[in-house]
Image (tube, rainbow, N blue to C red):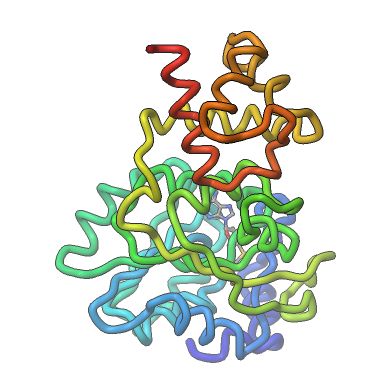
Length: 288
Ligand code: SAM
Protein backbone atom coordinates (compact mmCIF):
# COMPACT_ATOMS: atom_id res chain seq x y z
CA UNK A 1 0.00 0.00 0.00
CA UNK A 2 1.43 3.37 -0.99
CA UNK A 3 -0.50 6.12 0.80
CA UNK A 4 0.26 5.12 4.39
CA UNK A 5 1.16 8.67 5.40
CA UNK A 6 -2.36 9.79 4.49
CA UNK A 7 -4.28 10.48 7.68
CA UNK A 8 -7.52 9.20 6.11
CA UNK A 9 -5.84 5.87 5.24
CA UNK A 10 -4.43 5.53 8.76
CA UNK A 11 -7.81 6.23 10.36
CA UNK A 12 -9.54 3.80 7.97
CA UNK A 13 -7.01 1.05 8.87
CA UNK A 14 -7.61 1.74 12.60
CA UNK A 15 -11.36 1.41 12.05
CA UNK A 16 -11.10 -1.71 9.88
CA UNK A 17 -8.80 -3.60 12.28
CA UNK A 18 -10.12 -2.11 15.53
CA UNK A 19 -6.60 -0.82 16.20
CA UNK A 20 -6.04 1.53 19.13
CA UNK A 21 -2.68 3.33 19.50
CA UNK A 22 -0.71 2.19 22.54
CA UNK A 23 1.02 4.96 24.45
CA UNK A 24 2.96 2.34 26.38
CA UNK A 25 4.54 1.02 23.15
CA UNK A 26 5.38 4.52 21.90
CA UNK A 27 2.97 4.27 18.97
CA UNK A 28 3.06 7.62 17.17
CA UNK A 29 2.88 6.88 13.45
CA UNK A 30 4.30 9.17 10.79
CA UNK A 31 1.74 10.98 8.64
CA UNK A 32 4.01 13.61 7.07
CA UNK A 33 4.71 12.24 3.56
CA UNK A 34 8.12 13.91 3.22
CA UNK A 35 9.73 12.31 6.30
CA UNK A 36 10.00 8.58 5.49
CA UNK A 37 11.60 9.06 2.05
CA UNK A 38 14.21 11.30 3.70
CA UNK A 39 14.95 8.77 6.45
CA UNK A 40 15.33 6.07 3.78
CA UNK A 41 17.63 8.23 1.62
CA UNK A 42 19.86 9.34 4.50
CA UNK A 43 19.75 5.85 6.01
CA UNK A 44 21.58 3.93 3.24
CA UNK A 45 18.44 2.22 1.93
CA UNK A 46 19.80 1.55 -1.54
CA UNK A 47 20.77 -1.31 -3.88
CA UNK A 48 23.31 -3.66 -2.31
CA UNK A 49 21.93 -2.99 1.17
CA UNK A 50 19.69 -4.88 3.56
CA UNK A 51 17.88 -2.79 6.16
CA UNK A 52 16.75 -3.71 9.67
CA UNK A 53 13.81 -1.60 10.79
CA UNK A 54 12.64 -1.45 14.41
CA UNK A 55 8.91 -0.93 14.95
CA UNK A 56 6.80 -1.21 11.79
CA UNK A 57 3.61 0.54 12.88
CA UNK A 58 1.44 0.35 9.75
CA UNK A 59 4.57 0.08 7.57
CA UNK A 60 4.85 3.66 6.34
CA UNK A 61 8.67 3.68 6.63
CA UNK A 62 8.97 -0.02 5.78
CA UNK A 63 7.65 0.47 2.23
CA UNK A 64 9.96 3.43 1.58
CA UNK A 65 12.90 1.27 2.68
CA UNK A 66 11.72 -1.67 0.56
CA UNK A 67 11.43 0.53 -2.56
CA UNK A 68 15.13 1.40 -2.28
CA UNK A 69 17.00 -1.45 -0.53
CA UNK A 70 17.39 -5.09 -1.64
CA UNK A 71 15.77 -6.47 1.49
CA UNK A 72 14.07 -5.22 4.66
CA UNK A 73 13.57 -7.10 7.93
CA UNK A 74 11.29 -5.26 10.33
CA UNK A 75 10.94 -6.20 14.01
CA UNK A 76 7.59 -5.34 15.59
CA UNK A 77 6.51 -6.17 19.15
CA UNK A 78 2.76 -5.58 18.85
CA UNK A 79 0.82 -8.62 17.56
CA UNK A 80 -2.20 -6.40 16.85
CA UNK A 81 -0.24 -4.84 14.01
CA UNK A 82 0.48 -8.12 12.23
CA UNK A 83 -2.84 -8.43 10.36
CA UNK A 84 -2.63 -4.78 9.34
CA UNK A 85 0.90 -5.29 8.00
CA UNK A 86 -0.24 -8.34 5.98
CA UNK A 87 -2.47 -5.92 4.07
CA UNK A 88 -0.24 -2.83 3.88
CA UNK A 89 2.97 -4.67 2.91
CA UNK A 90 1.27 -6.96 0.37
CA UNK A 91 3.06 -6.88 -2.97
CA UNK A 92 6.55 -6.36 -1.50
CA UNK A 93 8.44 -9.63 -1.76
CA UNK A 94 11.59 -8.18 -0.17
CA UNK A 95 10.08 -7.50 3.29
CA UNK A 96 10.07 -9.88 6.26
CA UNK A 97 8.19 -9.06 9.48
CA UNK A 98 9.53 -10.54 12.71
CA UNK A 99 7.17 -10.46 15.69
CA UNK A 100 9.46 -9.82 18.68
CA UNK A 101 10.81 -7.35 21.17
CA UNK A 102 13.94 -5.98 19.49
CA UNK A 103 15.84 -6.25 22.79
CA UNK A 104 15.35 -10.04 22.69
CA UNK A 105 16.51 -10.51 19.11
CA UNK A 106 19.94 -11.96 18.40
CA UNK A 107 20.78 -9.34 15.79
CA UNK A 108 24.20 -10.69 14.71
CA UNK A 109 22.56 -14.05 13.82
CA UNK A 110 19.68 -12.28 12.11
CA UNK A 111 22.13 -10.35 9.93
CA UNK A 112 23.99 -13.55 9.00
CA UNK A 113 20.80 -15.40 8.13
CA UNK A 114 18.91 -12.64 6.34
CA UNK A 115 21.47 -10.40 4.66
CA UNK A 116 24.12 -12.67 3.21
CA UNK A 117 26.21 -10.78 0.65
CA UNK A 118 24.63 -7.42 1.48
CA UNK A 119 25.81 -4.41 3.43
CA UNK A 120 23.47 -3.63 6.30
CA UNK A 121 21.90 -0.50 7.75
CA UNK A 122 19.42 0.11 10.57
CA UNK A 123 16.57 2.61 10.19
CA UNK A 124 13.72 3.39 12.58
CA UNK A 125 11.24 5.81 13.99
CA UNK A 126 12.04 4.61 17.50
CA UNK A 127 9.53 4.12 20.31
CA UNK A 128 10.73 6.90 22.60
CA UNK A 129 10.24 5.03 25.87
CA UNK A 130 13.25 2.82 25.11
CA UNK A 131 15.45 4.94 22.85
CA UNK A 132 18.64 4.55 24.91
CA UNK A 133 18.28 0.80 25.66
CA UNK A 134 17.68 0.10 21.96
CA UNK A 135 20.62 2.22 20.81
CA UNK A 136 22.91 0.66 23.43
CA UNK A 137 21.70 -2.82 22.41
CA UNK A 138 22.54 -2.02 18.78
CA UNK A 139 25.92 -0.43 19.52
CA UNK A 140 27.12 -2.92 22.12
CA UNK A 141 26.20 -5.89 19.89
CA UNK A 142 28.92 -4.54 17.56
CA UNK A 143 26.71 -5.24 14.59
CA UNK A 144 28.38 -5.30 11.21
CA UNK A 145 26.26 -2.37 10.02
CA UNK A 146 27.22 0.75 8.10
CA UNK A 147 24.85 3.13 9.86
CA UNK A 148 21.98 3.51 12.33
CA UNK A 149 19.51 6.21 11.27
CA UNK A 150 16.78 6.89 13.79
CA UNK A 151 14.10 9.37 14.76
CA UNK A 152 14.27 10.22 18.45
CA UNK A 153 13.01 12.99 20.73
CA UNK A 154 14.67 16.29 19.90
CA UNK A 155 16.30 16.58 23.34
CA UNK A 156 17.60 13.01 23.10
CA UNK A 157 19.03 13.80 19.65
CA UNK A 158 20.89 16.78 21.06
CA UNK A 159 22.33 14.69 23.87
CA UNK A 160 23.23 11.77 21.59
CA UNK A 161 24.98 14.04 19.09
CA UNK A 162 26.55 16.38 21.66
CA UNK A 163 30.29 16.99 21.63
CA UNK A 164 32.07 15.43 24.58
CA UNK A 165 33.39 18.08 26.96
CA UNK A 166 30.14 20.08 26.83
CA UNK A 167 27.23 20.50 29.21
CA UNK A 168 24.80 18.48 27.06
CA UNK A 169 26.76 15.25 27.09
CA UNK A 170 26.11 12.18 29.25
CA UNK A 171 27.28 8.59 29.49
CA UNK A 172 25.22 7.62 26.44
CA UNK A 173 26.98 10.38 24.45
CA UNK A 174 30.31 8.76 25.26
CA UNK A 175 29.06 5.35 24.13
CA UNK A 176 27.70 6.81 20.88
CA UNK A 177 31.00 8.58 20.18
CA UNK A 178 32.99 5.46 21.02
CA UNK A 179 31.14 3.25 18.55
CA UNK A 180 30.17 5.80 15.88
CA UNK A 181 30.35 9.26 14.40
CA UNK A 182 26.95 10.85 15.00
CA UNK A 183 25.22 13.58 13.02
CA UNK A 184 21.96 15.39 13.55
CA UNK A 185 20.16 15.36 10.18
CA UNK A 186 16.83 17.20 10.44
CA UNK A 187 14.02 18.12 12.80
CA UNK A 188 10.43 16.83 12.60
CA UNK A 189 7.54 18.68 14.22
CA UNK A 190 5.06 16.93 16.52
CA UNK A 191 2.27 17.52 13.98
CA UNK A 192 3.93 14.98 11.66
CA UNK A 193 2.61 12.09 13.80
CA UNK A 194 -0.69 10.48 14.64
CA UNK A 195 -1.38 10.77 17.50
CA UNK A 196 0.76 13.91 17.94
CA UNK A 197 3.26 13.49 20.81
CA UNK A 198 3.99 16.29 23.30
CA UNK A 199 7.53 16.71 21.99
CA UNK A 200 9.30 17.49 18.73
CA UNK A 201 11.64 14.97 17.14
CA UNK A 202 14.88 14.80 15.20
CA UNK A 203 16.46 12.30 12.87
CA UNK A 204 20.07 11.37 13.61
CA UNK A 205 22.52 9.06 11.89
CA UNK A 206 25.29 7.13 13.61
CA UNK A 207 28.01 6.13 11.14
CA UNK A 208 29.58 3.07 12.72
CA UNK A 209 33.35 3.20 13.24
CA UNK A 210 35.57 0.43 11.85
CA UNK A 211 37.72 0.53 14.98
CA UNK A 212 37.84 2.12 18.42
CA UNK A 213 39.11 5.73 18.46
CA UNK A 214 42.07 4.70 20.69
CA UNK A 215 43.50 1.62 22.38
CA UNK A 216 41.35 0.58 25.34
CA UNK A 217 42.58 -1.85 28.03
CA UNK A 218 39.10 -3.05 28.94
CA UNK A 219 35.95 -1.79 27.25
CA UNK A 220 33.59 -2.80 30.07
CA UNK A 221 35.78 -1.01 32.56
CA UNK A 222 35.84 2.11 30.35
CA UNK A 223 32.04 2.28 30.41
CA UNK A 224 31.96 1.55 34.14
CA UNK A 225 34.21 4.61 34.60
CA UNK A 226 32.07 6.74 32.26
CA UNK A 227 28.79 5.77 33.94
CA UNK A 228 30.21 6.36 37.41
CA UNK A 229 31.61 9.74 36.36
CA UNK A 230 28.28 10.96 34.97
CA UNK A 231 26.24 9.50 37.84
CA UNK A 232 27.39 12.49 39.92
CA UNK A 233 28.17 14.97 37.19
CA UNK A 234 28.36 18.01 39.50
CA UNK A 235 31.08 16.41 41.63
CA UNK A 236 34.77 16.44 40.81
CA UNK A 237 35.83 13.07 39.43
CA UNK A 238 37.76 11.60 42.39
CA UNK A 239 34.49 11.53 44.37
CA UNK A 240 32.26 9.35 42.16
CA UNK A 241 35.14 7.30 40.75
CA UNK A 242 36.68 6.32 44.09
CA UNK A 243 33.29 5.16 45.40
CA UNK A 244 32.28 3.21 42.30
CA UNK A 245 35.66 1.61 41.65
CA UNK A 246 36.66 0.84 45.23
CA UNK A 247 39.77 3.07 45.05
CA UNK A 248 41.04 5.85 47.29
CA UNK A 249 40.43 9.42 46.14
CA UNK A 250 44.20 9.97 46.11
CA UNK A 251 44.64 7.02 43.73
CA UNK A 252 42.07 8.49 41.33
CA UNK A 253 43.69 11.95 41.58
CA UNK A 254 47.12 10.45 40.84
CA UNK A 255 45.74 8.52 37.85
CA UNK A 256 44.15 11.73 36.56
CA UNK A 257 47.39 13.63 36.90
CA UNK A 258 49.29 10.84 35.14
CA UNK A 259 47.20 11.54 32.04
CA UNK A 260 47.44 15.30 32.26
CA UNK A 261 44.02 15.84 33.88
CA UNK A 262 43.37 18.03 36.89
CA UNK A 263 41.64 16.26 39.82
CA UNK A 264 39.24 19.22 39.99
CA UNK A 265 37.68 18.21 36.65
CA UNK A 266 34.09 16.96 36.28
CA UNK A 267 32.69 14.34 33.86
CA UNK A 268 31.30 16.88 31.40
CA UNK A 269 34.74 18.46 30.93
CA UNK A 270 36.44 15.35 29.52
CA UNK A 271 36.74 14.38 25.87
CA UNK A 272 36.27 10.74 24.87
CA UNK A 273 40.02 10.30 24.39
CA UNK A 274 40.62 11.67 27.90
CA UNK A 275 38.08 9.20 29.31
CA UNK A 276 39.90 6.38 27.51
CA UNK A 277 43.29 7.52 28.85
CA UNK A 278 41.86 7.83 32.37
CA UNK A 279 40.19 4.42 32.30
CA UNK A 280 43.45 2.84 31.05
CA UNK A 281 45.33 4.51 33.92
CA UNK A 282 42.73 3.44 36.49
CA UNK A 283 42.79 -0.09 35.07
CA UNK A 284 46.54 -0.21 35.76
CA UNK A 285 45.95 0.97 39.35
CA UNK A 286 43.44 -1.81 39.90
CA UNK A 287 45.22 -4.59 38.04
CA UNK A 288 48.81 -3.39 37.67
N1 SAM B 1 7.57 2.94 11.86
C1 SAM B 1 6.23 3.39 12.20
C2 SAM B 1 6.03 4.83 11.79
O1 SAM B 1 7.06 5.52 11.59
O2 SAM B 1 4.90 5.27 11.68
C3 SAM B 1 5.93 3.21 13.70
C4 SAM B 1 6.82 4.00 14.63
S1 SAM B 1 6.25 4.02 16.31
C5 SAM B 1 7.05 5.49 16.91
C6 SAM B 1 7.19 2.77 17.15
C7 SAM B 1 6.87 1.32 16.77
O3 SAM B 1 7.73 0.46 17.52
C8 SAM B 1 5.44 0.89 17.10
O4 SAM B 1 4.92 0.18 16.01
C9 SAM B 1 5.61 -0.03 18.34
O5 SAM B 1 4.61 -1.02 18.43
C10 SAM B 1 6.98 -0.62 18.06
N2 SAM B 1 7.71 -1.08 19.27
C11 SAM B 1 7.63 -0.57 20.52
N3 SAM B 1 8.48 -1.20 21.34
C12 SAM B 1 9.11 -2.16 20.60
C13 SAM B 1 10.09 -3.15 20.89
N4 SAM B 1 10.59 -3.28 22.12
N5 SAM B 1 10.50 -3.97 19.89
C14 SAM B 1 9.99 -3.84 18.63
N6 SAM B 1 9.07 -2.91 18.30
C15 SAM B 1 8.63 -2.08 19.26
